[in-house]
Amino acid sequence: MTISSSLNAGIAGLQTNAVQLATISDNIANSSTMGYKRVVTDFHSMVISSNGGTYSAGGVRATTQRLIDQRGSLVSTSNATDLAVRGRGFLPVASEAEVRAASGDPSMLLTTTGSFRTDSDGYLRSSSGLLLLGWPAEPDGSISTYPRDTTAGLEPVQINVNQFSSEPTTRVNLGVNLPAAETSAGSTGDPQPLSIEYFDNLGISESLNIRFTPTVPATGSSNEWTMVIEDSVNPGVTIGEYVMTFTDNRTAGGTLASVVTTSGGAYDPATGGLIVNVAGGPIEIDIGLVGASDGITQLSDSFAPISITKDGSTVGNMISVEVDANGMVRANFDTGITRTVYQVPLVDLPNPNGLVALDQQTYKPSVKSGSFFMWDASDGPTGDIVGFALEESNVDVAGELTSMIRTQRAYSSNAKVIQTVDEMLQETTNIKR
Image (tube, rainbow, N blue to C red; front, side):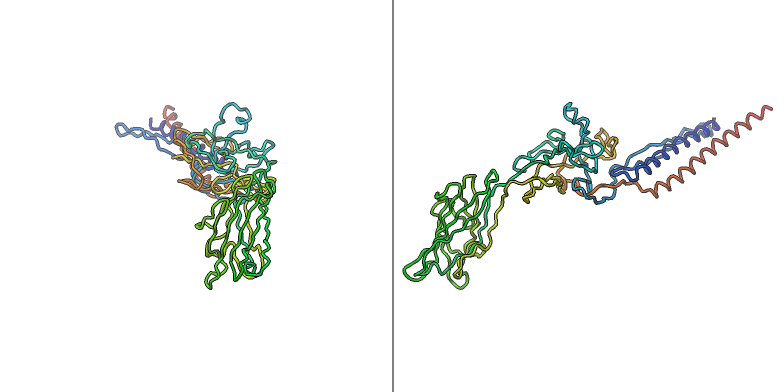
């Protein structure tokens, strides 16, 4: 019985070392595979109880585990939609075949990196046929509230590369100097015109026509101007009228002293803004705070529009797509505006090493991995998403080659045990001669 157990132990040793060699060869073969997670083999002894002073060899068995939670190094690329997770978390993806089949919601798979590019239908697709999943944004760029513990709401990220977009103007900052000399007795009192372009809800260029008229007193200086605002859509119709008075003291000379609203939205002294309603909706005009020189001022004898800024843009073409660190998929247009079109969450699980490994460096949740939860990237326990980057394999080739040498020696030693047992059995057989 003891000799037979030695033979069985030697055979078990050959089998377990063959398993370890298989994992080593798989690791080395995938050492250049982006996102590959190496597999390790653990040996466990098997003990058979001894009876009456005899000992039986129990042998050994092998178990394997894929180290999914160990991350590889990140390498930079030239593609904005090459994505890698820096830290904890997984990107949700789906098989292209399932999506094309349209047989219900596709199964969510997980990966830590992927090189995604738009295909003929605009889907962000990897070369291995994986589609990036995300939550679609509302027209204003906001993301609705979706359940975080199910895949409901997730859909393949689809980019319309022929998309047009515009952004209406909602705010204008006026930095204008009015000539103080025009409010003195004997001046002409001619109004100072100013036209400011804005973009309506359809991206059409319109203009705010502003007229600054000084109040000319009989004697001295009034330091007072009347600002009248009209919309080019409705010429001749006043949408706002304001009487502005400026200080002339040594400490704050030329700054606003007060603003009186005649018509239109009331001036807010806390923000320095007022709101007028054009044909497409309200626009906030910032004319500056009382006592500050950051908006409309009255100095010297020249009319000077010093700084006029506004938001909004005309219609533009989409030129690129990027994914930021928070998982927001943003479309960039040639007019300079950026619009959020999707949000890619990061999926986290209690035991990443319990995931079921599939082809193309993808994984599937299991009972051992625990239930998943979708976080905003950079929130909670998850890391962030890095664009222009891919994750390398976490295989250390030098370490694998060293393990191969040890495995080869162990395999040879177990083979020697079997050879020795065979010779001993032969000697036992020769006793009968």
